[in-house]
Length: 199
Ligand SMILES: C[S@@+](CC[C@H](N)C(=O)[O-])C[C@H]1O[C@@H](n2cnc3c(N)ncnc32)[C@H](O)[C@@H]1O
Image 1 (cartoon, rainbow, N blue to C red):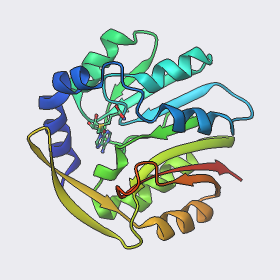
Image 2 (cartoon, rainbow, N blue to C red; image 1 turned 180 degrees about the vertical axis):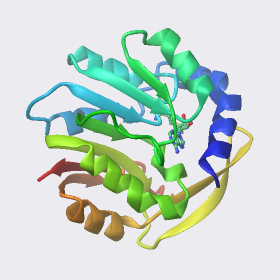
Image 3 (cartoon, rainbow, N blue to C red; image 1 turned 90 degrees about the vertical axis):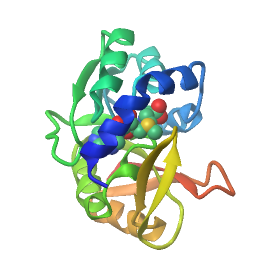
């Protein structure tokens, strides 16, 4: 599924997403775990940040300067009203050029929407976008094989793709990162988060 189409779907869902996620702490424990691996620096990038911003809040409380990227203009418009202190950009992570390196990069339930053939190049981009000893947190499908599936969410059809856990782990190492933590955080759901650190 083309990322532009994903963005249009999230444009239509943005207000609903904000209402659904009010007061949510989903993924924040994983972020807090990731932050324990950060040694220095206070620049953070949230890829596919959406509009609700619980990651921004947790990061800002710890004095991070936050940048958010999302392919949905509606998501970013809502986020901009809520977090005027953040740098917020509309863009597709497949083509977006990181303007700098970041001490923390998060991609929570966002890069799993990428077309399968963009997974590797985006993972490389995120690893290369980390500063020295920087930390990456992302979610992916927890299977062992590469593949894509279609699923319904909020009344819209989305594509989800994964390279499989072994391949993500191999690529992280190839792109200069070492896994610090990996967890099936919604077991028995096929959902994994990984924390990796630049070697
Ligand atoms: C399930 S929502 C998660 C939002 C946020 N990370 C959260 O957990 O609240 C997925 C988000 O990823 C964004 N997204 C999907 N594909 C993207 C891409 N190629 N580039 C940038 N953002 C993307 C969507 O627009 C959407 O806001």
